[in-house]
Length: 168
Image (tube, rainbow, N blue to C red; front, side, top):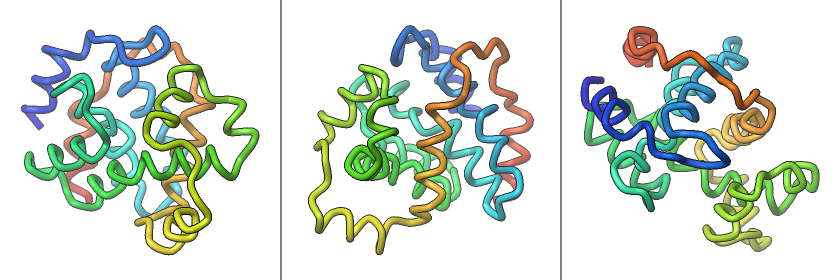
């Protein structure tokens, strides 16, 4: 957990999207994912939501795939990295299949989706639904991201994250 704390301390001030720093985005996701408390994989969801953009602390153009690999290399359970790895395909799936989601995307999120490939083909949609690890969970995380208030004044609770990691 120390390497993650150090990265946030040293690079969390970088702006991520829509006037939000990486630290603010992580805190927003950390607290927003509390909505999934009734889920059997709640601990995994909270960790993945919090660390989904850890790659951006390593390199400004990092992908979710790089973030997932970094998490695994630094001791994060595979279940967490699988959720992180699935974020790009999930957003592209929602962009393809959900007009309400598409309209609610901020300009930054829209650019991210388009740059990562935009709409999925029919074959890609079928692949996502058949093979994406925890597709339903990924979709709900992505939809939650649109509804969590932008102004989070608290920081990530590192002790709580450590306890979540021990339960995965």
